[in-house]
Length: 375
Image 1: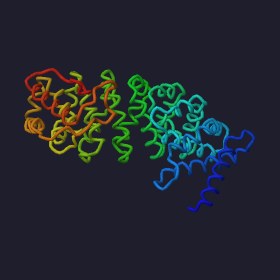
Image 2: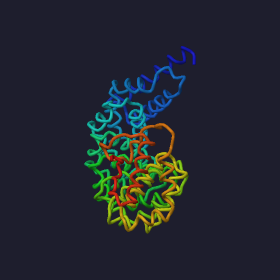
Image 3: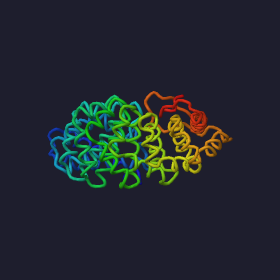
């Protein structure tokens, strides 16, 4: 791009910013301005861009665009609302960790408008609204405000009756919300489990991943594991263990089963659901995360003397010993999802070896470990 073209593009962008922030500009002009700003932020992700997404986002925020975009959410046409939501997503995703953009968006009154769009918008509007809620909910100090705004019923409705894209977006929002320990009970109380389980059973790859992540997060609260079992989640979770071994769906499903098996009353149901063969297969062929989670689940199951013989008879000992004998050094920290808040970050190999060691001890009647692998 020539210097003259760049200057012309910059002038047009400044005009769009001014039009969006002008309280006297008509709504149609604001809607087109929001769309142009969104495209500019997306273009900034190109390596050849002269301005980084972060710097561009900071400039847009300084111009007062966040408040103007939220205002457009409340009073704009359908096109304007979708443009505003997309721009908000791009700004939130481009912000540095610790940025106050999410808080500014919430304080500007975005949540009621986002929930309204989630309830009554078209498919694009619902998907984009859920996307903004995800970006806000990942900031734990703001996630409770998402619930207070009434988002849960709308998300569950989209999860159960929306298009595939709406279901995926809703599951992503629920996965983000359940990363906050204190909100998991509310998600279960809003009857989100049936929709998450249905998505784990018959959703696409991305939808299954979000559903498995949400279920794993919920199961990290011990008092909610029985609710997951009562919702008939065990069979889909066990089936998910046999998906592509390196899939995060598999490690999250194994994590969820591990948490459930920490409850002595629920262990027989885990075994009766057929979990032993796929858990043992994961010990042989799964990713490092999956091996650690499978070893943890087997340890919890084997802590029940009545079930330990079934673990041995299913062929668990050799894979457990093999994991103990792994020569590889530490591989890296666990993914943040599906771990109880406050649990120690441990290397995949360290966690897997510790779980295997505890599993071997549990076959002698040791007590169970919990799903956070914080032993």
